[in-house]
Length: 295
Image (cartoon, rainbow, N blue to C red; front, side, top):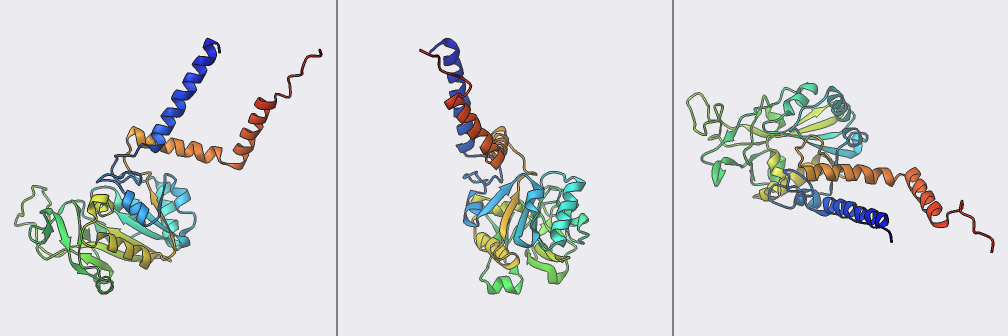
């Protein structure tokens, strides 16, 4: 084997090893479905068979058979907002979760009165460990009948302008919105119950608004959080495919590499690509252009 062949072989080994490492090494980025650590969604996506996609167009092409989960941590283009609107109006179930991101852009597009406060909801009395982890025990009657007794938020916010019949869960009367974010209750910050989950019918579909995306993460399997999520999926989208739009989530280089590898995988598994690859293999193996010399 000559030096050139050795170099090519070594390069191929390095590339393949790198690709396998990127593909199989678990993510540590927040809200990633293949992140098995405290801030990931591996438990949620595994238990509820949630698929992930970077393509909002793919996620919204079958509204009547899809639950779309949006964690609104990046700005939406007008085209994205139009797709989400068409999805919901066409019968889709949208779970819109946010705390301090861009969820209100979607709410505005859908002409909802409900808004995310965008400021911390604190509860010094009814909480898990500290006031930044409010424990919610006031539910819609159907949730109570389903056996949901409590859920816990993690640095969440509150929903505003929610009609009483649209409230699924609300905080205690001791909670308040920390408008100046000093973690101290001030006189101009009224203590009262705030909606943290709401279901609003829109067109032929439904929008479920959650004031804390952290309810999904692995470490928040606390009280009735998992049962609450299962209830939402079963009530507003029985037998539907659950798809999470990951295009608006922050990504580390490892996660971006996984996205690119997935795109490559989708391309090479296309029937035309498979045919081209097989054709190339045949040409390399049999080399029909090379004729044997006469002896």
